[in-house]
Picture 1: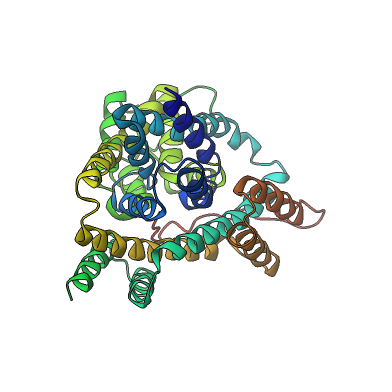
Picture 2: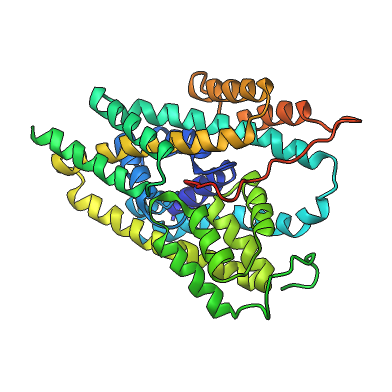
Length: 174
Length: 206
């Protein structure tokens, strides 16, 4: 019961930080699930995060995996609800008044200002993720190749990411 | 459509049934592989079902990106609410989340069984490196739409450095940098500020 409460608290809190995308919450996600609560190790968290990028739908479904690791199916359900309900209610409420704020003078300032901050948070998340994911030249090369491929082509990201995994396996064999 | 929300004019006919909303979002939630959920949303909502026009889609997307929460679920809520009110919002969101949630629950159990195998570890580590490439692309695309002047880049670097190198926790960074950035772009007399809108044709990875 205590664990379910912790899961609810952690993921509800994290959800409020996902401004501009799930990656913005990555630094706190790591701090809380790895360093504070020791639910998963950093490599485990990275693995779930990356699998979550491959899964269909919202790209932070890895919160459900962590919930399941900690407390089974109830943990998964609590993580899911905690992560999506608070921001969901907020979005629903603000969505209803937002168009009425169309002429509000501060609206463009808020949109532009928070846009920059969210890019900064994603960059911070990418740096922290890179410390765990790029543990050698091979992994750095994989990241760079996938980056360039996705930047230059319209290929579905799932393909190069799965290919990255296969390259990792191949390297393990050799 | 709820009466209090301003008219967005779904292009044609009566609003879809709740069951239809659930189904369409469930299909998008199950098929949007590879993180390009925004592209799938546009195809499903604007092109296939004609529930929104492109202008409304872009408007809702810009709300989704400004507010906390993921684009995929924020869009589900906003679109569901426009089509059939609160119940539409709930069903759209549940449909969007259900397939991925089931899959990632299964992944957690599979990981418990096979996660320690060195070969699956090598696979997962490769995936993590690839996913990092994806994250950086998403960031570059987001940045190219949002960042307009040098001050914006300064905000980006200061926020990132504070969190990644000086261990400032995200909420403090968010509030601190947010206040500075909003103040920088504050409304000033004589200056017409256009909000950033999404170029719709562009491919989005998130």
